[in-house]
Length: 111
Image 1: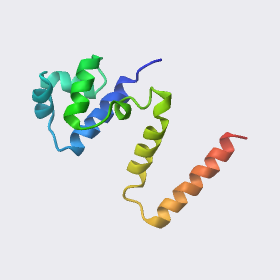
Image 2: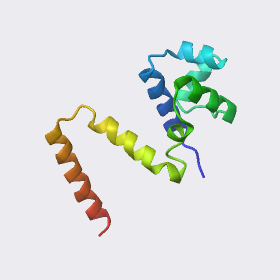
Image 3: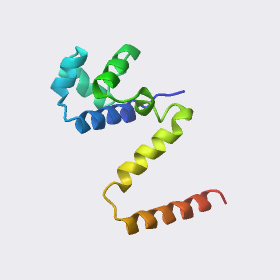
């Protein structure tokens, strides 16, 4: 099992921004430097489980969401969050079109 630290960092960054937190405020809340938060968000450093727990708790998000691309049982979380982000600003008609495209692509992949 390989952890994609860039993807993990990106989800941390997105969660932080959704919570209207700066890197400074997150760093202060989890007792690390702003530079360390920056490195985590950019995937340039590994983080310990206690640090990951502290970040998830501060951001009000689940560990499942933060590591959803690594843990196979979290597939539903990964898919629903990605689709939610993609479809968030789409009209109903555009949403239906994208779903049709996705079904077509899936059918081609399974041939």
